Structure formats: C-alpha cells, structure tokens
Image 1 (tube, helix red, strand yellow):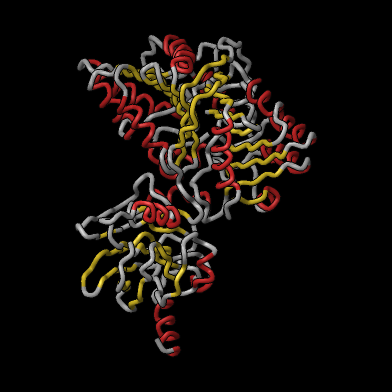
Image 2 (spheres, rainbow, N blue to C red):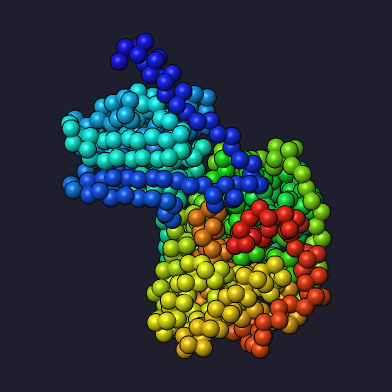
Length: 574
C-alpha cells in the first residue's frame, strides 16, 4: 500500500478508537462484574463462544495451545486479539493467527485486508517492534488497525471464510482468547493442574499450631517466597528478617488494595521488611492481572507451605480463625509454587512497596488477641499424590470435579457459600446421587445472611431425603470464627488453600489450592472437621450472640460497611 494511503488508513483507524479511562483499583471488582462482552467466534462448523469461560489463556497461552493442538484436521483459525495495549497510538496491538500450514490466507477487518504467512502461529501487527515485547510467537508486519470500540475480523482462503472473530468494546490492557471468548489481562498465563507426585507432609490446623509456619521460615537456607493477601504479623516479619540476615533470598508478594484498605499495622511490618533488605511487592494498578491477589503460601527451600489463613495475628498467629494448613516436603511442589510466584511477582503490576506506599492511605485496625488451647497437634502424613491448583485457570473446575467424582462422602469447611452458586449446586447434585454431604460454615456475623440461607436450603433438602446437611460453626472456645477453605472427599482427597467457593474467586482472583491424595491426610483433616462439626450440633439458626458479634466487629476488616456497598456479598475477602 502506498505511504500516503497508509497514513490515511492509520488516521482513520485511530479515529475509530474509543478511549477509556482505567477504573480505580477499589472499583475493579464492580467493573469486572458489570462488564458486558459480546464475543462470537464463527469457525468452520459455525461454533460460537460468548462470555467468560474459566481456564482460558492469554494470547501467548492460546497461541501455544493452538500450535500444540494443530493436527491435520484443525484448520486455520484466529487465536487471539489484543486491541488496546494501553500505549500511545495503541502501539503493540496485534492479532494472533494459526495458519496451520495453509497458503493464500488473508485477514480482513472490513477496511483493510492483509496476507497471513503460512507457517504456523504468527502475530500480525502494524507495529511489530512493540509487539515483539508482548508475545513469544513470531511477529509479522501487517497494516491492521484495531478498534477499541468493536471490530470484526474475518480469516479467508480465497473467497472462502474460514474463521470470524467479533468483539464489542475492547478491555483495556487485556487480550481476547478466541477459543474461550475470555478477556485476560496482559501477562496472565493461566496454568494447568500440576501433579508433583508423592510426598511427606506436615498437616496442621490453626489456631492450634501457629508455630508450623514460623518453623518453616526459620529452617530456610536458600530461598523464601512468601505470597499473601494481607501481612501484619510481627512474628513472621521477624522470621523473614532473620532469614535475610543469614543470606537467604527473601521475596514477598501481597495484595495492594485489600477490601477495607491496608492497615497501619501492615504498613509498619512491610516498612520493617524493606528496611531489612527484604524485597516486597504488591499487586496494584488499573491494569492489575487479578481482582485480588488472595493466595496464602510460602516456598522455603524445598518445602511448600499452603494455608487458608492470612499472615496476621488472627490467621497464622493463631489468635482467632479456624484454619487449615499443610507443609509439603517436595521439591517438585515447591518449584511449581515458585514458578507461580515468579509469574506473579515479575509482572508489570507487581509494584515495589515503597512506590506503592508513597501514594497510599492506611486505616487503623485492632489486631486479634484471642488465646486458644491446642487440641490438634501437627502430624506427619504420607501423601500419595500432590496436585497444585491455581486460579484463574483451573482451581474452580478441579474443585467442582472432585465434588462430581465423589462416591460416598464430602465434608466441606468454608467461611461462606452462596445458596444460588455453582459450588452449592454441585454439592446438592452429589447428594442427590447418594453422596453424604456435610457443610460447616462460618459463625462470623458478616457471613450470617448468606450462610443461614445455605443451612435453610440444606434443611429443606434433607427433609426430602437428600443426604445433605449444613451447620453454622459454634467455636466453643476452640477458635474465633471459621476462615478455612477446605474439603475432605471420600476419605481419600483433601483440598486446602485460599479459594473461596464462589465464581468471582474462581475467575478473577489469584488463588492457590493443594489437592492431597491419600488416606492419612484425609484422616487427619477428617478428624478435625468431625470435632468442629459435632460442636456445632444443635445450632437452631440463632447465629452468633451480641458479645461475639462485637468482638468480631472490632477485629474485622476496617471499612466493612463501605466494602459491602462496593462488592457483591460473595466477594468479601480476608
């Protein structure tokens, strides 16, 4: 195309763009929940995809999948599109196409038509140098100018239409996976379920065994990678600083905008860590890859520590919450979590603490000060197989798959469930085919409405003969409130991790869960569940008393009322 035509075409393309200011971090969940996408993908068989699908990948991930799955019958296709790279002039925008070895292919946006190289997967870009920094597939220069306000792309061979991709308004800084129809933030590559084999593990509960996380950090000689949602534990900070002093490389990655805001206690501990030479980053910014960075894990040399609890006095400090945790002695498991950490901590939205602190405000919050007797001691257990589950990507499907595969019994310990949600529906479906289901939910006042609805629904089902029952926990002096997110399935598999059982956590948050196969871990967590379950017997729906409510309110998230206005009930995080 002549140079003057290229200039004219570029100007026309830029004029079609829709500039959108990125939403503040505090409103990201609401924006994600309300964002309406109209995506249709018409392939050889007239297949269409609409909406968000768990497990979709970034453009890079999708390109890799396409390259790996292109058999003799796959055919050419559009793989992904990245219309709004949040750069001046949208430099770097691209379309990924898998030519599948076919020649004479063209791609059109209705105004321009460009040739597609025949050799495998390629990113077509008007600014190839900028695009090469964003993808790991070959890049070819092509005069396509993608509209942020909506576009239709058509892949042809001669006059025959092979594939079509249409989107209605681009998501800023996100790629559209043509196979799944999901927009994914740049730099987010969902991972598959990773099995790391058999291992010895230390199973424990909180508040009973707060020393296990500390001991794990104290024993490290080479590396500590600590990931969390919030961090305000002076004891954990002491262990990290001591490790740094003895030459251990210590990195910390946290959420930059927790519900209710960062506390002054967290600011104090993170300031201490940075002053002591510990690298601290937080996930933040208008184009953050996750609604919330919500996992709770640590890698200490070849040990992988996965928790349901936050790095604060009420959690790992043993001052309040009922939580589950496991330390897996497995280099493979540790390396997989280290890879997750590197993916997250080295992204463009992982902001150094000092930079984040300079523009942040902080809230006062009273730390938990409860004291509880230890009933359940840590126990060494043999695990026949460990599987690492992560969200976004695979954790939600894997958890629901475990429910669907259950044959005899499922015991669930969770802060909350949505009576209208997919997880409760999966549990009901399991019960209707004869699986005995027991659900133990949090006694916290801010979960009362949602959890009472689950109890009432389960009660009605039980009256019809469906073997499902739900109870609200009654701590009885053993803990403050339930915060664990775990399950024991068929006495053979345990799920332990940060994933709250709702759609938002599954698709928008970074979460980490370990699936532990084996009778020994199932027996340990099954025993702790049974004790808490029996203590909750006889709960007639009265909920927590005013004394408990007042205590919980003082230790709950600051700004909880504001958060309740901004977020759906199922999107409360701790």
